[in-house]
Image (cartoon, rainbow, N blue to C red; front, top):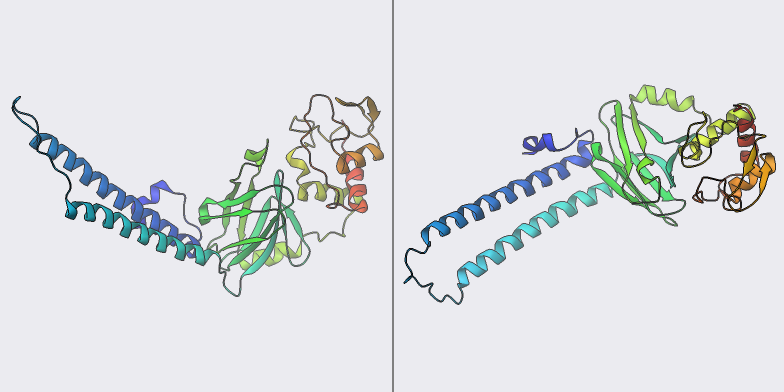
Length: 314
């Protein structure tokens, strides 16, 4: 039945979580079409049959019809029960991952995603998963309400501050799928995108073993990884192009003029203050939109980011 409506939806890549949703959608469309056709035909029939043919025609007084009233009340009520039961069963399935599900921690923030793995690896705006195995996402927000939505898997789950929510899926074939945030979360809500990248089990194990778990590389290399993982690149470019915030390129040692203060030379103290107290000094031409990273970045993390910014000359 669902195949009749494939043209209306993206390809289903997680049948274990999405097949029920597609079938329910097909059922609702078919029932709606039957009702629409029935009501339209009845209207045309009655308009023709009871068309006034002379000025003497009078419409008889009809108070009610018990059979008709019961029929049009009971049938919609039964349909509502069917849709509710079907949808509730699908919701329970999404909330009950299999015991062998691979667990990934997800952190949402304005405006990006961080995915953390059991070996300590962290990846920004890309979640890598193995094909053929259920994956459970345990999610939290660092600021406001967000929502994790993957149309290809038919999954959508709100991500809330101060509590955990979860959802699961199982991709059957290697490939990529788009992730959207579907709760408005500020200026760059539409840019809060990510990718689900599905590997074969062997390729996934290889990919995971090659990830930086936080301690490797030079300070500048660690800083480059951090600005990706923490979502800094969503608002600050590394090549001088204009985004929501000032570019990191050419920042180090430059003269910064502010809307709410004088001017300073961009040194270690200025960059640290901008990370921990972003509203203290607002660069001219930009709005006060950045959230504080206090508690999210350690002193060592901030030092690594500064070392990376130093490498981005004009």
